Length: 579
Ligand code: NOJ
Image 1 (cartoon, protein in one colour):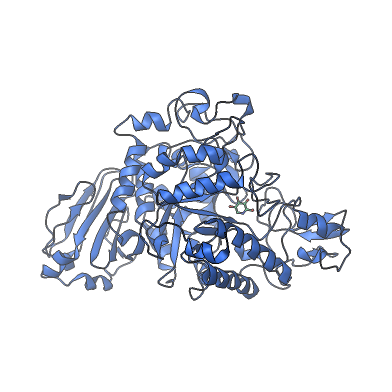
Image 2 (cartoon, rainbow, N blue to C red; image 1 turned 60 degrees about the vertical axis):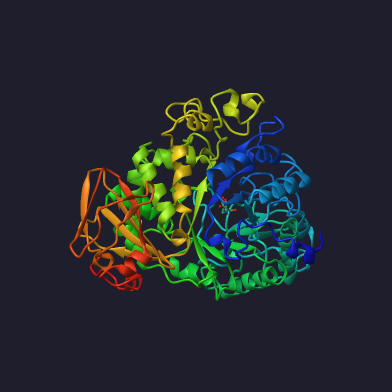
């Protein structure tokens, strides 16, 4: 397909809104882990195609696929050996196109990975670079030195495996630069040919029709002596060039920034709406866990207070868990110690600067806590991302290396290989979780489909209720500050739709009294049931909660306007007080 045609053939949208990503709910999965359609032990696009009914049934709008390109798989595909092909184990380009078209036909958008900071050392560009003479244009595609003390102010990210960001290459007789594994050399963005080549790779997938690209590891694109080699202006210049191409040639497509940084350092990745449409909010994620462990809302309230405004057409992406460790880079040393003590007592649960566990085990398999965290995920500002398997409360396997313990096969049913694959169990890319309480015989989609009170059915309902308002995706946020800090209360407001969220972070029953006088005369409607709660008046409004209990209430704007208190505009006024 020609580029101009592709721009015209922008994917079918459930609504034609170019800001679709603001209302989306994203489901993240690895093709390898989802469903094996050809019985070789690895998931593939044929298998995924067969499971689109299920994905659609969740109520999500968008799929984010982990890397599926040819790769030696030493970093699970983030070590790319060919940017414009599919790993044959997962299928063919035709299989991918079929999957993409079918997803679009169902109104599901698809975000894929653009990993441009580095390639695999098996990529032909690197093989060419290492054999080319020093100083030649071919060598210049990567970052080389004779002095491994260069860029000494740069931290190491994979602290468990790497001791330096430089690795000696006996073929090139020089050191090459890598921010991640030593088999993942960083591309040299000071060479214009590199930007041209990665732009070409970007066009390849956009031409096929993907709706968005997650930009992996983008803080590290450019290096400069005397800096920490992160978030440099030259890196932002590269991103602006990519965005200009996207905007000029592909309507309605988006960039999602993976920049694991503090909020003020992430803010520039939105630029003036000329870099990324979305960026992960890394710092809020561990603080949701911290708030529950401490039974205190302060960590969440504080980090949101430190979160800068972003341009109106930009959006945070929020998540509880993903394919990586639960990263603790964006917390203080003290907070990190606390998180390790609370959530990773066994050293095997730790990797690099983080915790390699899934949501359900982190929550001690306590259904009330799992619901609470998902409720936060679906109501805090931003677009929520659900990691495959967490919707059924899958467990993890800390005996597998690297981050593989949270990347085990999807548990579809209680039969052979959990319905993931028909091949020999020994041939699977990873063992399936078998031990209670997370073993596939108990925790699987089929069992939960058949159980009215299952987590899966609750998650579907949660997503459906979220979708009854745009306030969660687009609304402004205001915390209320009742005296009881064990309860987190906030308002989300968008175009006259006002939602009150109240969550008990404690294992005990709790009560709060809220100043809702601005809504006097209104009746809160509990959103799951549409049941009215007692009307609001000028006096403190009392709410009681069971352990880890939560409420979403709708306070309708027209009712607000009728009340004696100020209208929704009064949301501008804070409630005062500390966290
Ligand atoms: C970020 C990815 O999320 C992670 O899985 C990967 O290991 C690094 N980038 C390096 O590619």
